[in-house]
Image 1 (cartoon, rainbow, N blue to C red):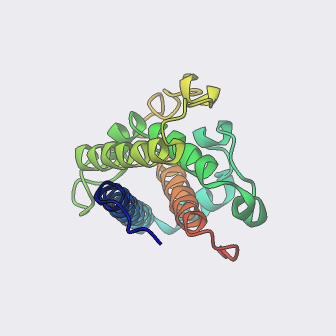
Image 2 (cartoon, helix red, strand yellow):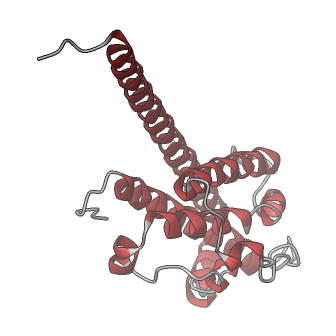
Length: 218
């Protein structure tokens, strides 16, 4: 057999180098993507816990009769987010694609950017909860993180989701609520908690979808 020419060996080394660099870049992207997912889940967990604390503190500040009235008259299912198309149960959530869950999460977080500014009027100043500005900032950070995850999922492809360009339905719904109205204040807090729970669930399942795990149980 003839000895391979130096030029052939050089070409082989170049090709091998390109493959190795490509593998390292892909590993780096995967690592960055995982870190973004982990950060997003941690951020929404914090918001969900904060929402739970806010509504618990609000309930603790009420008189027993006021609590009984709220338990009877508040329709928890009626929130601004009900107008955003989303999975209706565990089975549908588990069957949803990663991209779909990320888009829904983005819309839910986006729907609270303005209403979050009114949360201060729903709790007593003596209660130790996050300020409305802090909550709004946390929502904005989470929205940005989810946006980056969506772009990574599209991998350079155009975003074909028409719903992303639609105005939020009744985006001033919560802003028009009277801050001194007990029922409306409770609805604001309850809907915030409900939506943060939704986003936490969707991001957990989306993260599972990323690992191609078919057993993404809730």
